[in-house]
Every structure is written in C-alpha cells, then in structure tokens.
Image (cartoon, rainbow over all chains, first blue to last red; front, side):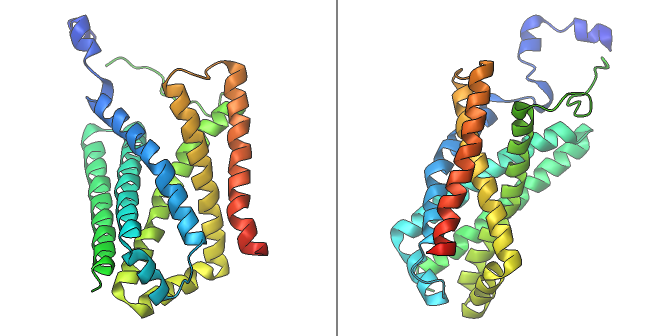
Length: 130
Length: 125
C-alpha cells in the first residue's frame, strides 16, 4: 500500500483532491449561495417580522405577490442548496467508509430535493391562486 | 494505508475563541438546516388550506415555538455574520491573530445586535 502510494506521480497526487475526489465546484457553489443567501435571508426575516397579518388570507395574499413568490422560490433554492453542500462536508468528515458515506450523502441530497420541491410547489400553488 | 492521527482533537487543545467560533459556525449551520423544516411546514400548510396554516401559526406563537424561533434567529445571525468573516478569509484578508480575534468579537456583537433588532420591536412594539 505504502509502496503504491509512492508510485503516484506528483501531478496525479495534486489532482487527487482528497476523499471527495472533487472540490472546486463544491467550494465555489457554497460561496455563491452564501452571498445569495445574505440578502435573501435579510428579506425573509424582514418579511416575516413585518407581515401585515399572520392569518391565512393575509399570508397567502402576501405570498401570491410576484416579487414575494419569486424571492421565496430563490430563497428556498439557494438556502437548501447551501445547506446540502454544508451537510455534505460534515458527512464527508464524520462518516467512515466510502460506501456508507455515499449512501448517506445521497439520502441527504434526495431529502433536500424533496423538501425544495415541496416548497416550490406550495409557493406556485398559492401564487397561481389555486 | 498511512495511519495518520485523525483531527479534530477537541480534548487535547485549550479552548480558544477562534476555535469555539469555528465549531459554532458548523453547529449553527446544522441547526439552520433543521430550521428549514419550519419554512417547509409554513409553505406546505399555507398551500394546504386555512386549518393547516392556523395550526402552524398557533404552534409558532406558542412558548416552545417562540423559543425555537428565537434560537433559530440567533443561529441565523451568527452563521450570517461569521459567514461574511469566512468570505473575507477566502480572499486572504484578516488571517492575522489580532484581526481574527477582532472580527470574531465583531461577529458576536453583530449577532447580539441583529437578534435584538428583530425581537425587541416584537416584545415592546
């Protein structure tokens, strides 16, 4: 094992990228969504604390407005993607064994996809007035 | 396989502000990831109808609900402020010991100020 490690060329070792076998794409997307989350979450906190009315009619009327619906969809997509990228790093750090790690990361990503889809569907349903 | 010691060695280091804040960034990230379930609930309830939505509002305005929301707001503002600190590190700024501690204290102050800015009007408004 030790011997085969030494046979790896320096360039190949540099390209090895560690346990995840990739990195730049993940790192960059985490930063892009981080910057996007900043105004989106300030908007969300402002909105939920300045909601005219927290009854059903008031909330759905607020969410049905195009600007609010679009910003809410963007918030859901950006935040959930950011959360899945963060959760991936934690699982890569703490789950031992490549097989288990792959299973848990895949399950986590599917979970966030389902949650995001449920949110986007709900927003669109309210926005289109169903 | 080369057997290297595994990091982090939480039990052998003396606790430092920078180290605690780094761990807290990950902890608040996990808390916020679970906190997104509240947003899922809010939107699904609103799309389901009046009964489901008023149930959501009753839960969130109850004492346990308010404590959860308060906790999540602290987590959000901490992760947000410390995230900005991380973005500065990403462009290579603020790594010096003094700057790292200064920005650390700034994040803690910003977290407290933003949390109070949200909750004080709700309590006293």
